[in-house]
Image (cartoon, rainbow, N blue to C red; front, side):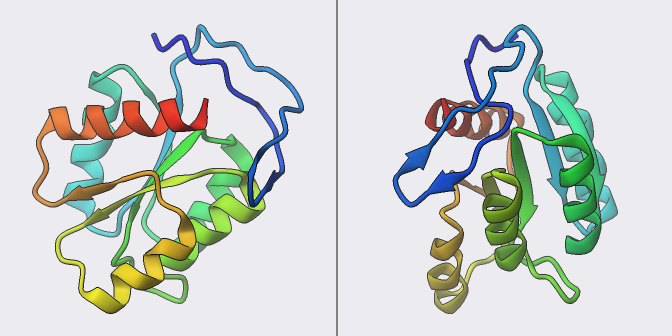
Length: 149
């Protein structure tokens, strides 16, 4: 169990987060997984659960992720930066943060410089390079949650 205090609903400005309501901190953090590769999504779903977090949902597209974020209000999202479709990973991370106050950790196999520059607009809380080890996933989530709190 994590002992992090966090806000259940907030609207962020450029400089911070205004706490509207506190949630029960005895519950593990809910993580949204957004990955269009079924095998990687399945691995992440199993791994996130095994290391003590709750999976808020798994989405294979940006549109599906936005619907899940609205319905489940996750604390954090793991987002494939190379997501295919009308909403790519960078745009999705920006929209999750702006519309749902859900920050993201990017997942990527390769990041070219133009995508890396674009990704900064999403203010990601981390980057997991594929292939990743379970300890890297755990550490990235823990670091991100510490930044949220």
